[in-house]
Length: 247
Image (cartoon, rainbow, N blue to C red; front, side, top):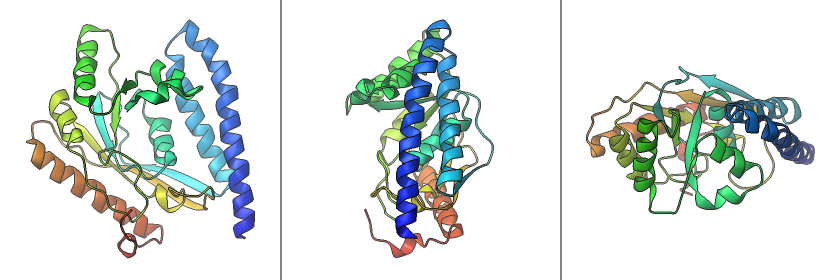
């Protein structure tokens, strides 16, 4: 069975990269007509990935909670590429603060810039957020859902990694509501290896954290919400996060 699942996973990987190439070409020309097609492109692609995941590798996916549609921060647990897929498949105008190097990635870089993702060098995120807010206020940039991974990187299911103060700085700088998001996707789409496993991956939007909290208080509330609910979802999937060592 492990070999069969590996083969399915390889087929799945080929399909999603192939779909990225085909859809990238089609939507490239459409975005030249109207930039709004970039949002359609990324949302459509993410839904195609969810479809392939369900029917090729047996990985169903579920969105819980109220999907944020206004201008907010989404601070999410990040366990694999699949949690990005789930968020972008439902958020109307998603955007990320991303590593500058990703701008040069084929297809991905073009559409990331088209939907308003902000490429920055490490250590300059604060300046990037200030520019983003100025651009929104002047009409040079469109409002949307700014997605942040407060641990700064992918963290394997059951592993621990500290939350970075940058999420709190962005929360303070923007003055926006924060929607925490929990997930268990790392149980099925693991940080290491190419095999993807069947089951039900869940991304859950949690109750909002209103603006105005001190940074330290915000970080405590955010971490408690994301970690406790991610652990609950992992246990729901039959995975005990407490039995695994730190990544």
